[in-house]
Amino acid sequence: MRVGFIGTGNMALALAGAIAASDPDVAVCGFDVRPEQLARFTSQIPGAAAASDNSDVVTDADLVFLAVKPQGVKPVLEEITDTEALIVSILAGVRIAVLEASLPRARIVRVMPNTPALVGEMAAGYAGGTLADADDLELVSTILGHAGLAVRLPEALLDAVTGVSGSGPAFVARLIAAFSNAAVAAGIPRPDAIRLVLATFSGTARLLGEKQLTPEELISMVSSPNGTTVAGRTVLESSDLEKVIQQTVWTTIARSRELGDEGAGR
Ligand SMILES: NC(=O)c1ccc[n+]([C@@H]2O[C@H](COP(=O)([O-])OP(=O)(O)OC[C@H]3O[C@@H](n4cnc5c(N)ncnc54)[C@H](OP(=O)(O)O)[C@@H]3O)[C@@H](O)[C@H]2O)c1
Image (tube, rainbow, N blue to C red; front, side):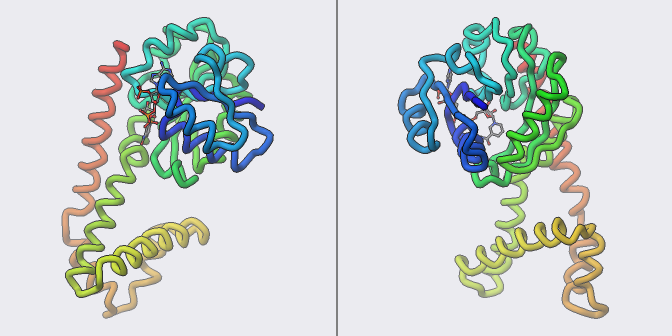
């Protein structure tokens, strides 16, 4: 199995690192216009090879990640226009139809990943293009699975994935900052406050996932009558929290759609 990377920047490094760590049988190769990025990629990914150009990456590859910035994709598409490879685009806001117009024989899969891929905890959505068959989608699912969670959805929902998971780490980090600030205001030294809040967020997520609890079930479990949690919840639940989160996600989705429309001209 050979997996190629066109562009070996931060996301490529994260994905390739997770793939190489999970499956030693995968041979990784990549190309980048920046020699220093390519050198970092080949030195940090065990067994990774440097290709001589982007055409070299797609030759004989079972799967190729398109991992340049959206604004830099045009020359890449011109360089590999005849390819029949399985091309997995992680470009934010570039629709499958745009890629298929430039790569008419390629099997395209579009992915919306997120930055926790850097620690093997990605939450991604992906959608298949016209020529991507069931085997292609299965392979993409397996390869993405090495870096975290990958959920197949219609392409029209990838803007919603951006609203929740793609941009989500920034929103969750903002909540973590707010809880940490409250802990500091209550007297806990900041480093301890951050450690406690981080462990509370990750522990809660793990508890929900591993015990298959709904958020409502967990809330009920920790809410003793007249207890501390019930007291705190009276504030939270009389606030605009639900509305603020809805508006945050919807505004992100709207911007993602706008960027997709702009990207339609790429
Ligand atoms: N970072 C995130 O959180 C995130 C999340 C979701 C999706 N994405 C998507 O992931 C993609 C990559 O993001 P990134 O943060 O990894 O970008 P990055 O670190 O800038 O890496 C992209 C690399 O590709 C190189 N490149 C540009 N043109 C090239 C070409 N013709 N051939 C080969 N390499 C070329 C770039 O060089 P130059 O710097 O010289 O252009 C750069 O070294 C983007 O499309 C982004 O939308 C990123």
